[in-house]
Length: 194
Image 1 (cartoon, rainbow, N blue to C red):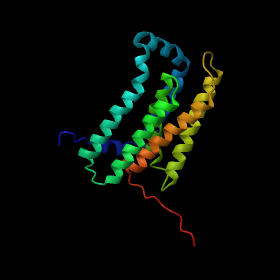
Image 2: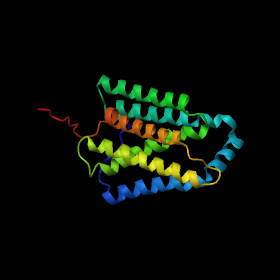
Image 3: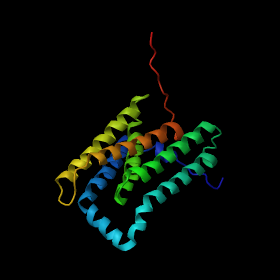
Image 4: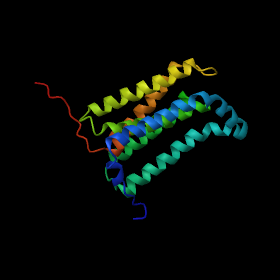
């Protein structure tokens, strides 16, 4: 197939490299914080308000990629996977449209959704069963909270609990996508009540 891509190397990455990638990605988010406001002002001057739709465009491009991946690479036949894919995609678009008041906020969905996926990937070698999802959500929530606390001490930035909530929602969307669309080889355990 023309779309055939070998993802085997992703599974062979060592534990140290996985956490290194998480640290580098998170560090890049934190390192960018002092420059975020100036960068956004520059971007708005260059492209105007049309840049506010970039998050929407990126989400649509990624959605199209994953839809093609599901159809041609994974060759998924279950309707439930596609229904979950479209429900999560619509939730992401609604989040972008109704929860994000400023253009820069639209990147929370992308940044913290990606962070959620790479934290999950790093934890995959540690946690078993349902705990991996809980640990991922907690860790990404804490990293998002640290992001906001850093912004609280920086000049020209402000602490905003709504941004922590946005980061957490973005992480949740990433986790829902993993659980219901990508379906990793992790057994979902339900407790047996006697």
